[in-house]
Image (cartoon, rainbow, N blue to C red; front, side):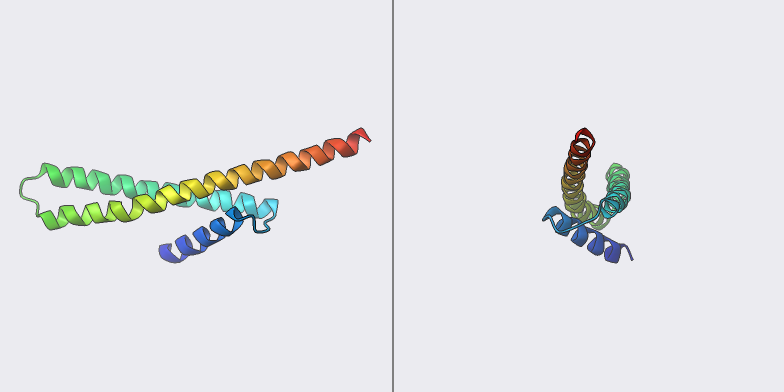
Length: 111
């Protein structure tokens, strides 16, 4: 299920990042979902890093277990990095849209 959510959310974030149409409500929803997914990925990375530290501290642990945690981190970190970039772009777009709306509203009230 996480992979489906990950794929669908990232696909929509990329599309909105390419300036595909989105309502303000959708932008808010995407920001909320993206923030939740970012916290999830960050937690997974941090958990894997803690497991790795514990494994490395034990002399009786196999390299296979250590390699498994390293692979997990190597898979998750790029996803987390991309998500952070996409969310920053989405936040910038939402700010631009709010600024445009406020500017239009100010123009209407000053007339």
